[in-house]
Image (cartoon, rainbow, N blue to C red; front, side, top):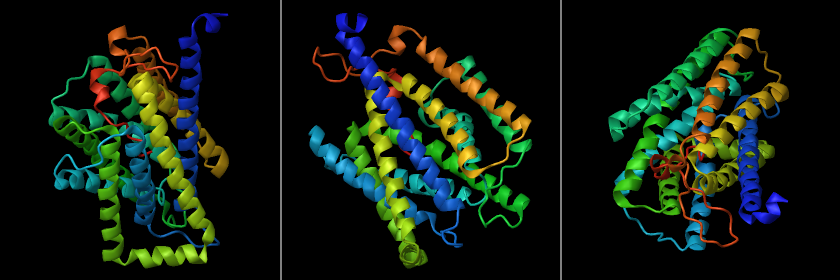
Length: 356
């Protein structure tokens, strides 16, 4: 058989499947638990503080960073001024908080589509901060996604089932404002991370360690200064399942980071983007089935437009010239997972779900 004649092909299939399944599975759990915690009551009481969830995420991510720095033999010491990490961490914490808070007002499918909507802001920030240039077809895909998301928002219900929605229209508007703020903050976080990575030559897990450590400090200061820490702990005491959900959420998020970074390193940013498209579609369908959201025919058509544009982008990337999809790390002839390089632009960027 072909796989017996070409061991590399077998390893490519096996590890490609492992990484893709790991990303989709981990982020599927992460998405379901986000919606469970922020939009579903615990014995009739809604969980009040999303910053506590952010802190839990970052706490587990710190340990992940420490372990991987030691496993990979990377330098754990600071290589950039602390204030540079803190700036990235502040936007990171604010973006994630807005992402969680939005689920009090709009459904998870709306939040998920909002992450696709960020394509245009990320491109604009890339031009401003990193002087990037984009092809016409990239702008066309971004426009198709933006138009599809806009249609989805305007042609059917978007409210969360959360108890926050006594006034559905008003609170849905609040949710959309939070999503816009999330998009703005998330859009600027990626270029800042990339700039930090390029200027100081940071290793992958060194940046994970220090950005998450600073993010944990920012979120803890926020909890203490607002008096929210005791309220969150008190809620956990009254509703123990919440703590289990928060821990599982954080473990899923950290697990997704490892799968994401591994896939990008070994198979490239294009394969990662295709995987994330599948993950988005799978998570949205699951949310509709699990939580019973209503969807109109026009919203279904909008989803076809959005994912049609996204899958076209993935297909275009997968059929690009070999130079655009060559491996990041050359093959060494060992039996370790196959190393397939990504494009130069993607190689210095840290994939974001990491903040799923």
